[in-house]
Amino acid sequence: MTDRAAIRDVASLARVSVGTVSNVFNRPDLVAEETRQRVEAAVATLKYVRNESARQLRHGQSRTVGLIVPDIANPFFTDVARGVEDVTSEVGVLVIVCNSDLDAKKEARYLTMLAEHDVLGVLHVPVGSSRAPTRSLKERGVPVVLLDDKGPARGQCSVSVNDVGGGELAVRHLLELGHRRIGFVGHSADPAHQVIDRLRGGRRAMIIAGHSSDSLQLVSTPSLNVRGGIAAARALLRLRPSHRPSAVACANDLLAIGLLQELLSNGLRVPDDLAIVGYDDIAFAEASAIPLTSIRQPRHQLGRKAAELLLDEASNAQHRHSRFVFQPELIVRRSSA
Image 1 (cartoon, rainbow, N blue to C red):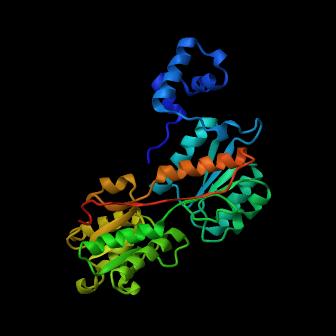
Image 2: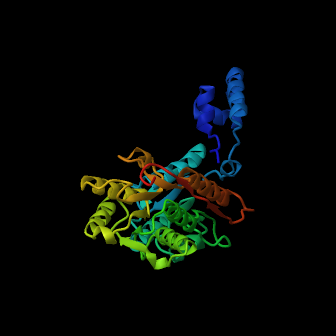
Image 3: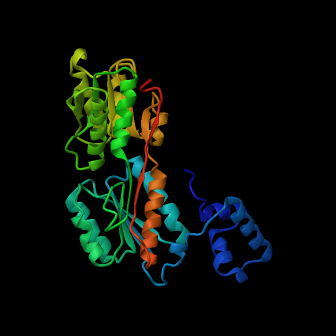
């Protein structure tokens, strides 16, 4: 799927400011004829389509939206935030980013603070499966779009990725390479439901291949970052080689990178001694010491679509709630094959 051209792309091609492009659309009498023609030519070349919902935001309405994510230090959420910002910047809407750290109390405080600041709406990666924390916002008439979450389409919009399918892709890839002792690096009781879905998908792949779901060996981690991956590697290294998986699927790329670093520093060969598959396909996956096989998520598109839905709900009286589920993709590199 190709990203839609943004207003800044039009401005760059026409060699003018974003404000000048906006004036061509809204106050063409202020723009010189030659400049207006350049902008119109750029619009035609890029097939730029205006965000009509955003344009119709009422004058005087809040120009701020909240974005609550578990950890903006994770490049996955940085890319999602960029997708959000690409849409909101076109109409002068500011994004406030809040880190919940997967802490329900911290999440609740941020939701309250955003409501008190009368934000236009909230894009929310929820902690756990409960939707209760956003109820007070909806009662105030503040739109909430669930991000990276398969929420109920009837009550609110949501944008997500098929994580069960992604987990199945990762483990099936390892099975097709001939591995039978396969591990999953993550946690079966993680507050991030995406991790649980990926584990479910991995277990489903084992069952389809004729193995028991328990044959997918769970390697629990204290966190979903590089430190967690290092801890997982040390746990694996404590096992006798005959009891150690020959391949692992990781709940995200940061875990996979930490795992890879620790294994290499202890003299193990990847993928010869242990094959690794990550999840997210962040930029560091391809640039790691051994390029990382990963399950790619359309991170930028997640952010864009969520922001578009939020702006439409905030401006369109005929808005209808919808649920978008993107499909992940297996990207094969040297860490597995």
